[in-house]
Length: 203
Image (cartoon, rainbow, N blue to C red; front, side, top):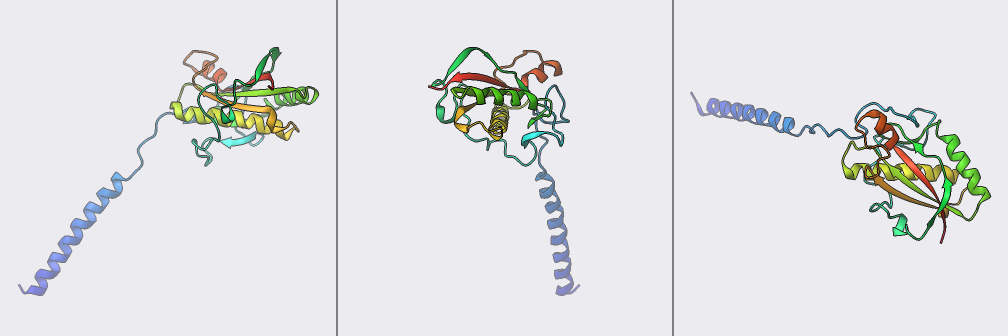
């Protein structure tokens, strides 16, 4: 056997080793299966829907970075940490706004509620609104905090579109920390995917 044949066999063997290890690298780079978030699965639940008749900031899995939710902070903080400067008005009760599974869209069933809130705020220009975004328990605390903020912002943006000045709103996200129902089933979760609207005196 001459040197040229030995060299050819050596190159062929090296190529086979490289291609085999290369496949292994590509397989190990496959993304791992994610955790079960509030949005891992079909949308369902009371209140809003994620269909074409929905309004708002979009679905959480529609290319929106869950951590790019704006100026949300710790529970109880509003934009710029201003919460606490406004005083809730006793006896002023606005309806809750409910959301579909893993959605921050304002469903068609929730639009009339927000229109009523806008009408009230137009007549009472001294009233501000604290919007508290909430989620059900599924998903990480970080993810749900961001989703809750997007839900609060979606309601704010709708009300601004109705002619209410943006300075009359504060948004707060509690994520999963303030459930309306402590249960661990869909009946409870559908009540926890919500915005709480709190009328307040703007100090």
